[in-house]
Image (cartoon, rainbow, N blue to C red):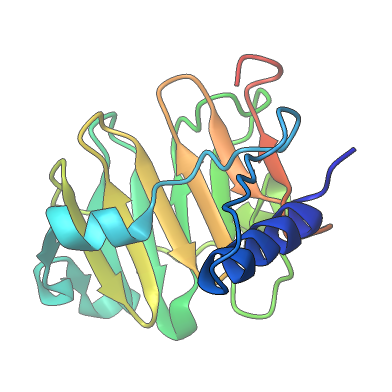
Length: 182
């Protein structure tokens, strides 16, 4: 198995050869390399509209709150914690929360996310092709109505068919909650 680290080393070596005037060596990623389901934030920041957090702020609930096109209630709180409550695509029956809280080692779902979840009910939808940043967390509504939130390495993506979250075990893992359809 060809790891991402080895691929990056091979790419760096190829670039060094190119810079030294040697023959160009092409380093394609191996076919079994995991691909990230998450949006490219450089594209988002370049082509999407950034909305002010004040537009979504609910003072009595200490944070910004927005609705997704399917009515899922999402928020970003103090110290950058974030999450959503509602019909989480692909989640097991009875699971309606997904979140990351400051101090957690990964995004998680289920009863542990529910018991830490902040109260708050969004009044405004996050429009497609827009994003909001609050306390170093960014949430995005893609053009195809996917909801993506990230705070550093902590992230999740909700699509109509499944929800992806950043796993904790290594830098490359992505867990899909849709039980085989992702």
